[in-house]
Length: 443
Ligand SMILES: C[S@@+](CC[C@H](N)C(=O)[O-])C[C@H]1O[C@@H](n2cnc3c(N)ncnc32)[C@H](O)[C@@H]1O
Image 1 (cartoon, rainbow, N blue to C red):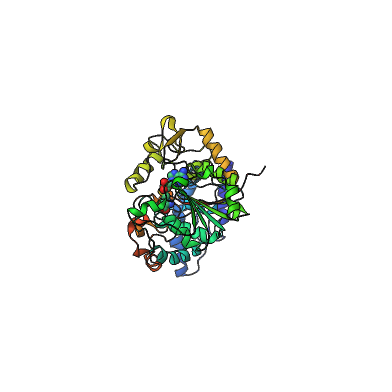
Image 2 (cartoon, helix red, strand yellow; image 1 turned 120 degrees about the horizontal axis):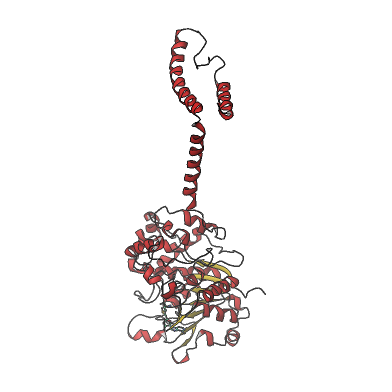
């Protein structure tokens, strides 16, 4: 008998009842009942013992034990390997998103997660979900009084709420709007800050729309529109701020809904010393008519990162499935351009309603993400106001958006807040509006 088998045999012997004989039978004779019980046990023990004795004698026990341990290790590795992604840099709420997937939607994008930009010091906004819920309750009746009921091509409910909420929280001394259209966003800014002056920049004056139907023209607003139009990047902000008595440019809130390259707008805003910026259309990768923060920041933190343009990849399969469910979802053919370029829109940096469409390399794109990160103090994407089962929106893919403020299944809350009173079409325009706090990069 090999030495190890002898040791095992000794160990088994020491575990046996001190009263047990060599074959496992009791040597005691303590009355009928005891004996009857003992016999049952003995029967069991003897089978188990016989098997183990056989294994020990034949020497099969060790390969068997090693096999069991190997199976245990391999199966635990398989289970956990799905979670072995580069998550150390992700803020906790994004980490939890990656692993939640309670409705089977969020987890679909797995390690791709939902894009977001990292701020310099990981600072976030002060407001909480409770503040957002309270804000919603207050905003719904305001929204119901809006002058432009049908704002097609302009903001819907989600972004109107976001702009109103952020503006009220920041309490700026002056508001600047770039891209007014018929004036709905001007009206939203006015609801948030009834007495604060607005500067509105838009090639066409909103009053022009009054001839055809509802529009909003504000009485406490300076319009750089029509023949007075000046692009945000060409304005002498130093002079304009002086004219409006603004000493501290960081007390100004700038709202962009002009469909210009957001990197370009960010640099212009930094140069002017503005700190609080809101971008209405923060398009997801592969979509939209201008380069957005979401596109810029997508995937750069994933080691070896990037989307997969491989047609048989998990990503391709997930994307094609989601495309069937959500109008704005992007499948792998739309995502990837020539040379497997997935960044921006098929490797392009779009600008000015896609009138300009410049190809950029991955290295340039990566540099852009580093630059954005170097100036960001806060990056906050407005969540959708409510889950798709409540709003009945079918356009944007909820798996590519933050968790809604009113989650699916909470119809009571949806109704109590007054959201059920609104037409479903007002919930269709969500494109991840984003609020940024920025400052010059540290030297
Ligand atoms: C999507 S609409 C704005 C919608 C509006 N904010 C609302 O909530 O209804 C885009 C607007 O940007 C204007 N626009 C185009 N180029 C611009 C520029 N360089 N600067 C400012 N506005 C511009 C367009 O004329 C259009 O009115």
